[in-house]
Image (cartoon, rainbow over all chains, first blue to last red):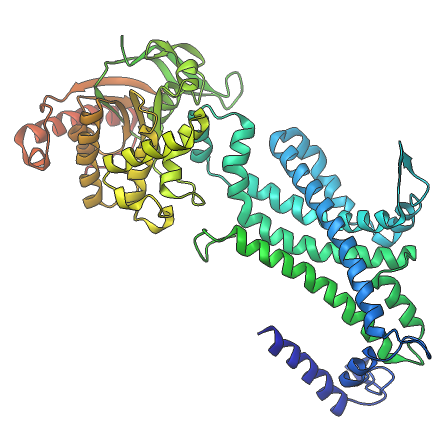
Length: 280
Length: 266
């Protein structure tokens, strides 16, 4: 199915390139139809071919290998950010479930936190790199990017988990009370398992948010080694070398796919014994 | 020693506020060991509240509640009673056997002991072949049986049931009533049973406690002398109908007084 979908996208791209206006066009008076010349919409096969070209004249290193190492770097960052985001998100959700007062006090701030543009926050967090020191621990520069990934990832996880933790029916909670189950036992034997159908989709959102956070953080802090930096470098060469930009974009998509695959695997594992079709 | 001893209990929700509700006023009730007592009455009469007070899921505003001679809270901590609700409330991520083992897990039993007990309970409710099934693979009646098995898993002397058969169809419901009587006879369990249904209350109980709303209180307690070995024939017995009429008239008095609705005549 996935392969078919990619084929369709390629076919649409090439079809539009074949029939669309070369200099762009107006629709209802707005200039929105993209130009179809090779500068703006290179042929898909040229993009793929570009991957196997050397990065610079005279080196063996291909663009593909550079992009792949960038993918691997950013993937690890996104993974750290995601893990960090899950921890914070779930921690917040547990706290808000435990203390109703905190929920009313904190929830609005969580929402506000997501309206702060990442670009505005990135330089601030990036400034910690190499400067912040806690005991013997020096804040590495890459950590800033991971933190920004976590900053985007934690929100959907917190909201999804919070809903899930509150999903058990009153009688299920009464049942646990009737067994004199302490709060933390009820949390792990009832609330968390009941929350799984809510947590899994929130992880999907969180995973892609972590990738966006990391890539944007790399771009705005100029962190080297990741796919974000590659995209911005290649974008500068876009006028002379349009296909190269797309190799970077392929790389970013690959990071996202890797994260999505990870979450899909956890979905399969966690929802194995659940009734099909009625999950939230 | 009585199984349950409720003395001069009052329960006011939102006490002291504008929306205060007198859920129960001056309730006295004693349930003897081995007895089957039903609480019946229109919606809002406090029968579920009374059950939750006995279970210590709610605290009374005043008065005292003893379960097995202990304060209700201690009885809850000691898992002296089991509880079953209208929704079976099985955990859909656990197998049938692990659902039954839940109260034992919380008590800290080891795995082998838990396994043995859940097997015993599954035999008791005639679901021996379904240990490994997931709850959603069972019918409503079977799920309710698992819930009963779970409630009885730690061999409590007292079973508290809140309209456990309310969501079942009529045929399954009658079948489950007979099953419940057999299970209770075999395990000599005391039951306090909340229901909307007059025939259900009469068929199951030694005594039917009739309650009335606004404020919730006990208006009548009717003895049901149908003997201990009741079966499907009991349902066609003249004495059975006589008792149904007695309960219905007691409830009608309640309805006349309160103008309430919500009693099923089935």
